[in-house]
Amino acid sequence: MESPTKTIAIWLGGTLEIADTPEDESMPTTGFSSIGISKQKQTTLEASEGETLELKGSGGRTVDIVETEGGFLLKTVVIKPTALYKALGLTEDDYDSKGRMKVKTHIVQKRKAMRFIPLRVGAMGIEAPVTQVSFKPSGSEEEGDSAEVTFKFIFGAQNYWYERFKRLDDTAETPA
Image 1 (cartoon, rainbow, N blue to C red):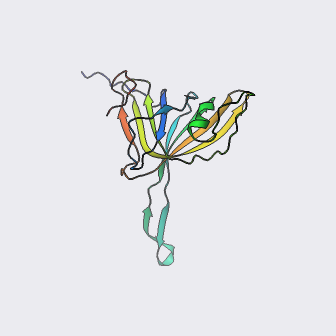
Image 2 (cartoon, rainbow, N blue to C red):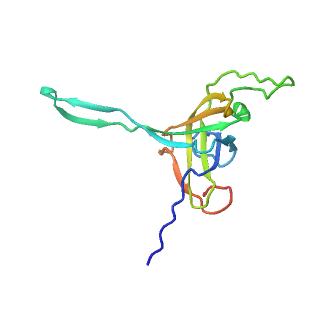
Image 3 (cartoon, rainbow, N blue to C red):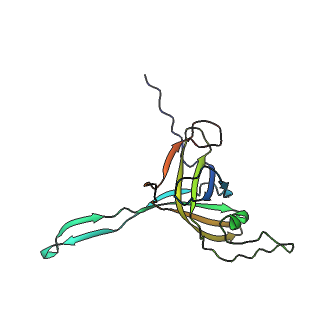
């Protein structure tokens, strides 16, 4: 009798890291840094819908339908994103001696590679060599200082959106 297969959740904690995307849009092997602590149960991978084009014939009948591929988004909420402001190029400074930081923009100018390394062995991780990052600062009495960070995957020169991998052991490294 076969033993039941153990199911391991894909997003049950882990580390989300970013690095600058190289000129050739390949997945970088160095330069990654953590984006900080993500709020528990707030990281999602979503597919966005593409466009649906319909060709109508006489009498309003649909004679053809063409669907374009949508995109992919990874969203998370980062708690206390102070270091992330500088890592994304939103400020040039850390807090000054008076406890102030000058935020110059909320638009992330450089494309970023992103990888999610799952906490558990056997869980699925994800790497995307080219993403556009959206940063929305927020805060509340309950959550404190936070930011919603969205990675919009771009189908780049490497001819894939993202790569999934299974965490094979307890090292922090992803499989090569």
